[in-house]
Image (cartoon, rainbow, N blue to C red; front, side, top):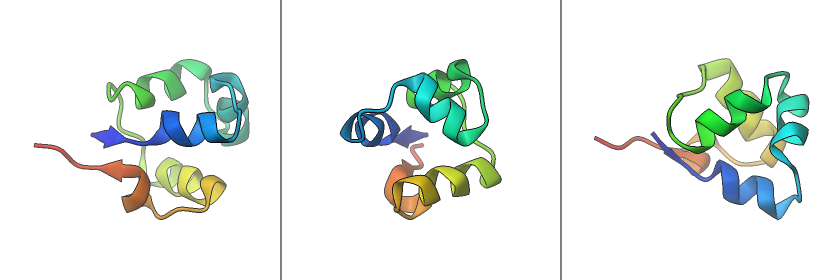
Length: 64
């Protein structure tokens, strides 16, 4: 799944560690999501969307 997480994180000057702390996950999880190697659970996707003030669809895009 493609996502804009890295761009949104950079716009806020968050490190991966900062974002991980805010979401209650590990830095490795944030890294894996940003690289498209891990798809977040629905509750985590809602947390991410809420934190950045965007809808889930604005952050994550499904790719075939």
